[in-house]
Image 1 (tube, rainbow, N blue to C red):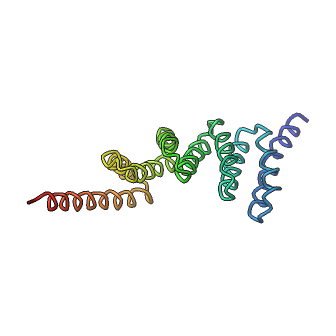
Image 2 (image 1 turned 60 degrees about the vertical axis):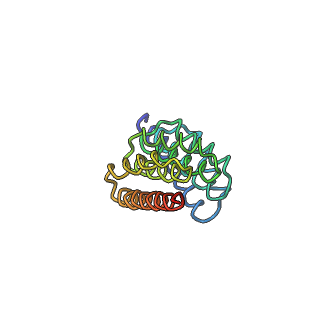
Image 3 (image 1 turned 30 degrees about the horizontal axis):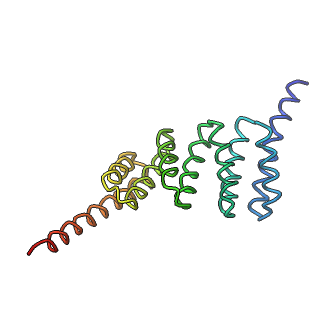
Length: 183
């Protein structure tokens, strides 16, 4: 009977998670949020972090940034090998979109430090873009190089393009600076 009880207890958070996903896809956001919150409250070691991540995504898309940040933080706090790095990467994008560059940089660095095969390279690339926008070109080049070195099939080629584009812009800027300073 204990084994049957354990299987039933194990299945319930997943069933609720899937119900939340369906509601989310159907645009029934209140019902989705309720289901995801139930899964998070269950404390299930696999389903709860994933529900927190999905809740963060859903709220982020709806423009509920403070609530999305809370949900992502729950996934991060779980220290789940899959969902925590993805959540911290998404949190970095959320901060960047809000113009909170220092927090974005910290979140991206946390994603990089996780060494997650997807989140880390994406964070390297995004950090490079962030540095470039802030005029921190040497740090941008370093971040792009890290993304290239990751050999991630999608991220590395994009990082090559960004790196070369940055070099072209810097070279063009140096040339125009020399021309304008000549007598």
